Length: 557
Image (cartoon, rainbow, N blue to C red; front, side, top):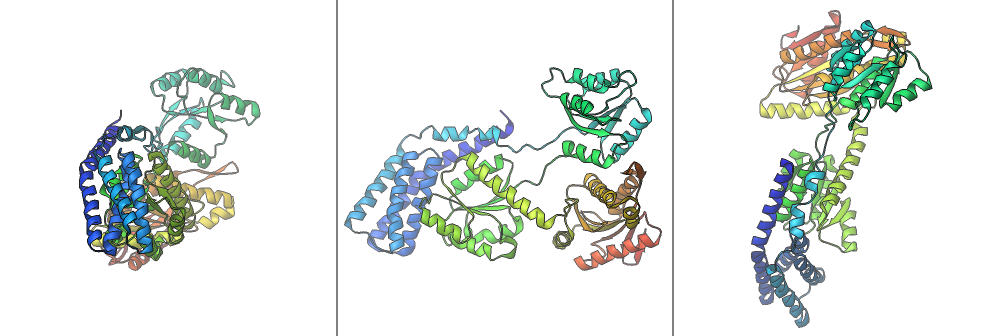
């Protein structure tokens, strides 16, 4: 069992034990509130009593007391009628309520069922952990054309790949047996046999539990060759001369870690046990969770955490889930955020009302862990996809012009508050119009994609990259002063200038210019943006293919 699974089981065990220990006190509190209502009717006390019983309805079964949950639901329905009708209990209703309070006491003292143990040992501990691609970035280039192989090694190395070239099949065969996780980029034809590459891969793949990932290169584009490549596990087939941009695209799809930012989930529930349980389940699935026990304290967490989804109970003190959803919907930044109610409420009309007043979905407690993770995952995935259409550039998947400006505004405020450095870089591909005019717009698009890919690969995950427009890019470099930013961007500039782009069998190279400003000299969004733009103008004026920093005294290298 993994450490993660062990930790999850320990969390669940603590929650189950804690719930059982606190249960007698909860039921005593329920009885005390009911006795107070017998002396003097009070709306606030009645609503608080209903909330307490409502909480037991879902949590009882969750933590191993199914009989308790059944009795609590019966009692809740009796109390709910009193709340909705704003009425007092007659003698018959009083007897029914008293009977069920007594039944709660008995149910709470009964031995827990094995449900709690099953919950602790739930398969989510091993099966719901989010697994992201994390494949080797080692590439084996196998080709008996030494010059072509070395050129491929050079181009691939620019994109951060570790590359080894092999001109002899025997040498390659020995290497792949030692490093089976390497991705193989192999020619079909060799001097000794026009199908040698396919044949050697057939031998290597034979009886392997996990096949080697292989891409084929060939001078011939015919069905027989392609079919042979597919039969030995070829994931792609490129004809010479190779379009390096398309090759890198395919390699990226295999090797780049798809480790997107983990889903951010905000849970609002006045039951600490239920809150802890749902948080543990979602955290075990790789999500980042913030818990709010008091609904009146949600605003600060909401604004700072910026969740992908909000889960909340309906019945809570001071502020109901429905009321809270209506408030959240009035905030421009959260108009479209998914709000899912997690409640024991099983009345369809109440659920419908809740969703019509700001909610998106309704999950009835107790909820199966797999169902919870699945519901959250589907909602967040769909929301992020729709949001990406609005904030991402279609060609590069980078932030678009509006989004990168918004990101800059937020990060400038954050860095100023934390007193940390921040740099803003404006990048422009040199003579891009000439690229389009000479090689065509498709070639121009490939150049733009190469630029975006290189920035994503060479910059840190914390840096924020956007396509500012056309051939212009913007980068927010976190915790970085201007000289350090210039050093990083200049290294990328050197690499980009050496990349070879292909258009109708003709190769060409491109350069870029960059202007940089930092927060220490330009203290707000407008000034740092204008300063970086002026530095970019200076870089172009000085002859292009260089990086210029703008300081208080003007542009300087």
